[in-house]
Every structure is written in C-alpha cells, then in structure tokens.
Image 1 (tube, rainbow, N blue to C red):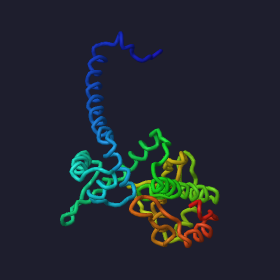
Image 2: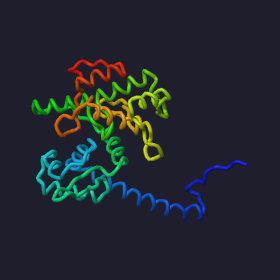
Image 3: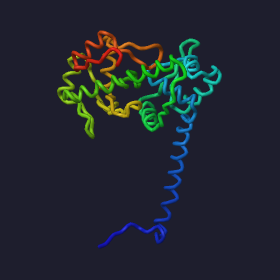
Image 4: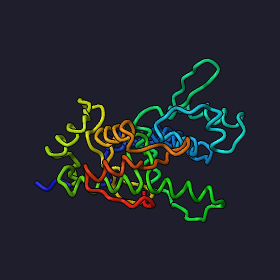
Length: 258
C-alpha cells in the first residue's frame, strides 16, 4: 500500500486541528528564544559575558571599568543578565560578584562567538594591540586553553595518539594514562563530557574543551606553566612552562610565539 504524507491542502479535520497547537508551541519557544537573544543584543552586556569567560567572578565595578560604562549603567545591565538566567550573583559584604551561571551559558557564548563576523579593525593604541596579540597567543576559554597555545596542545595530543578528534571526540587509553601521570583526575558522571571539541573563535579550528581540557588547564596554572596577564583572560607561558610543554608534548615554541 502506498502511504504518503498528508497534503496540507487536502488534510482532514484531524490533521488541521493539530497544527494550531503546534504553531502556538513554536510561538512560545520563539518568544523565550528571543528573550535570551535580547539579553546579548547589547554590546555592553555581551562584553560583560565575554569577560566572564575567564572563569572567575567579577565585581560589578570591575565589569563597569572593563566595558567603559558608569557603575549605574553596569548595574542596570547586570540586573537584566541575572534576571534572565545568564549570570549568577553572590554578595560578600558590600561587594556584588557576578559569574556565568553554568556551562550551558559558556557553550552558548562560544557558539555565538563562532558566528560573529570578527572585524579586523586595527587597535587604536599600542596597549590595545598588545592585549589583542596576547589573547591570540594564549587565553582562557572559561576553564580551558584557547588561542595558539590551545591549538598547539590539542594538535600535539592528537599527533601523539592521546586524543581522537573524530566525529565523537574522545581521549584514547594512552591519553587517560597521560593525564593520570600528570596527576589529573577527571570527574565521573554525565554532568560534563570528558572531551569537547571547542571551535577556537580566533583561529577557527578546534581546541580541547570538556573535563579533560579544564583539568589540563587547571594543572598548568597550578604547576606554574602559565601565568595570568593582568585581570583579563590572556595567559603567558612561563620558562617552566616552556620546559614542561616541550618535555610532555614535544612543543618548542619560541618565546615571542607564546
């Protein structure tokens, strides 16, 4: 028997009766989606969220200075982000600390950053140029490594058979043993994928995210392989770090490259 989809023009009453409810549900989801998109449709609010990708909690005053807005303006924007569920706040004394709510917000920001046009207007000052180059060399992507260093580490792990970046990215048995040898223990359970291929939005190639990326980044910071540059997301590779990356992954970057 030839069974074909119902033609909307000739659909019976039962077919037509289901469609208005479906459209209503779509409208409801659309309104909710638009509300979230609206939170990030403002440059100041987007700048706040991108700054918080460094994985730390910032005070409202720090975020105001970072975005170059008045404290009262920052407060208004932050209230919207907290009310919309993108940021969570903690109060300690008279200070108000803001952070990204959870990893779903991180994934949302990363995905939107991948789609951004990435304008290449030259920086206006020498300091701005330095910050741009530092972020491109090595930076935090919430809690894992990004930039040229993140890509180099990821590439070296793939080349050494520690990481498989196929359709379903995963650590190999050798990769788990390598992390264990560094003293990195990955959390169990389904809360976060062990490996996530996170598209680097400055390089447009994937770097290592997920629990494995976070564990490796935390270890590198704790061991002194990396140090923070100022209060932003940029990282610097220390002399000890150059030795460690060379010894553990065969990376031998020139000092000016990382």
